[in-house]
Image (tube, rainbow, N blue to C red; front, side):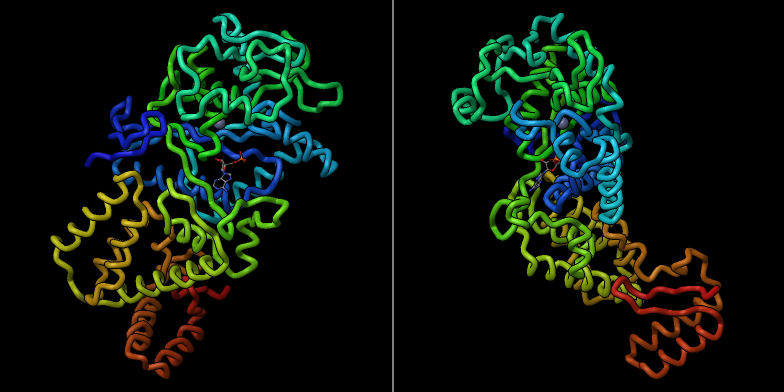
Length: 466
Ligand code: AMP
Ligand code: ZN
């Protein structure tokens, strides 16, 4: 079945036609690790997760690179202000490398909590300084970049067209930039590819232009090219990347290779809080841990993100988050009900659901429609293991850990002996018949045999007492 994605470049939904048969090559702009990633950032990585899982479900292999920005992202996406890493390091009185490691570790642990399928390669900007330097040298050799006292700048007028991704008029871009005019730049909208480091700057490297550090945009151009070649299939990021970061990445690639680096450019819209901007000053940039502290599981946040298409804004409220937690609990109990059912569902019915689910996700990741199919199956009056299995198959796209619900493995991950399984089966039946006395007796019997049964939100868990 064809897969169609909205391409910011063509402003149309296009059929995915990978450059290599059976394999899709993707680059995702990763986090800037100067602070805790917030739930808005994770909306972007949940979109990435859905994209990966959808492509895999369609049988594609993936070669996917995500960078970690640990240098060069200035306070504004253009060339304004200080390097975010250096500023945060000074504030926290830490070395920027230590700081990057700390926030990268927290980020990766949140990625695990959200059951995000990780890109095949996750690479740090600071590990690719030589590649970036080479890239800058090529831009200069090709006549696209020039030196000033502040660094190396890209000359936008050398391009046939700029911008290509956004509809913004350059005049508006200049007027809106609020950047002091730099008289050394050939054009006000030229951007830095390499920045000369001030004396007290910690992250800096030897270069033909003295001690200096890379601009944010050059990182992605150099790392994308190193791992995926001059042209790959999909480039992803947030909508904030469209007017500057991705526009400038395209400019650099054209200057270096003459090509636009990706065929399809996909951008995820912003998460808002209480219908407004998320910002540190408003104190509403929540983290995944803060959600957990208030009883919202990371997977409930994932389910919450499924309530809107990635190209639409999504509004976070605590009420909506609590509703998502209730939905997740319902989803789990729905799975258990199907597990306890004995109906045999005919293949045509299963196939019909499968097709509808696939049609939804292949239509530009239409997760709200796909979830509609999931809820329909959960609500189906006929309770059956066939439905449970189908939902677990869909879970390879959803990543909600549906497989683990009531799995007959102990939480110490040991196989459950058949004798114990039989008792569990009897207990399930007793609970189905609302025979709580019998259910309790069977629980005691299991305990005597060294197994503790807990009925949790995630379904029944079995623990072997050591
Ligand atoms: P940063 O760490 O600032 O480079 O951002 C990491 C990712 O999060 C980027 O893809 C941004 O586009 C994305 N992002 C930042 N804020 C939000 C938000 N409120 N909603 C969705 N994505 C966001
Ligand atoms: Zn990037």
